[in-house]
Image (cartoon, rainbow, N blue to C red; front, side, top):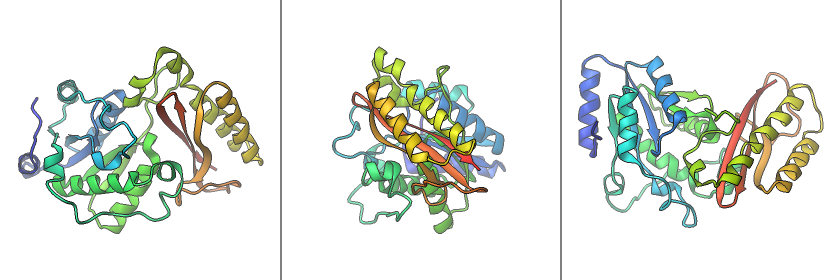
Length: 282
């Protein structure tokens, strides 16, 4: 399988698919594909006739001190996986294709990025909104599929699609996990053997607190602080661990009935940042 490398090429491919009467589900990725990505392709297939993917490590969403240069790039292996999953076309542009000159326009987001990853990584979501908006305009899919692991990204893109009137239905695939519960991530490759053994601890902490909340626990802050201390004692560095409202992506201390919440955490093991979350509906 060969990737489409230019905007004209991928547009021609997608338009040919549409001309045959096919609906298109689009799965944007940064490559280094794992079973989590493959599950998104399969979800896409359930909703559309053909699946189109992108593989692009977007420099605009990395801060200067982050891992842009180290981020795994495995295009040939990724293309093989796409072919095996029946993906109809893969758009794999270069930086020169996506950002051919100075970018005079940007997209800013208000409130929804104040906490969680948005609070920890300034400029992160502006970079995501820029590239996804470009990709949506290039591919013009009927559906776009994203993973729950990046749930704040999903909520922000949901708002962008609504406010910018993109005629695209967003779909969210559940988190795919290893047998020990660790959320699959391309960055898991950075973990050494000892860190890999510790890594599922974040998920176990989320599970513990989540069950207490569903069972009616009142002092959520105490529960969270206890789990933070437990994780730190095991060698984790805590970025955040909190309960957030899904609608506003803001911290919540007293969840109400008939509402949707996100119990989310981000931690470091050494230099590797891990994120995970549970959806809680009361």
